[in-house]
Image (cartoon, rainbow, N blue to C red):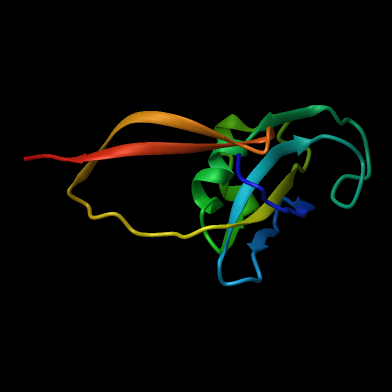
Length: 137
């Protein structure tokens, strides 16, 4: 088991906002821990009812931001118009959390192909997907 000290950053990002995530230390990378898009509750972005319609966009945001030192994503780009969780007349928002963990990032050559996925458990809370690679001959 890895012993990692993490501080989670949580934010509410309105429909026309940008999600900005950043790790300040040069040896840290972002790990998206949660992301919901819709009208979860009244707050900064939603001041009227109805609330309670939303979709889990954790995998979409994690694919764009996890394992990076910084990330900027348009909230509106996360969910296509035809997949909106709430009625079109109502504005939605992103409720996202991330933490920074020590790690390294690298770019893989384009000729490598992804194969069998594996999962590691980090401190009983975070799952990290590790993919073994092999080279086509």
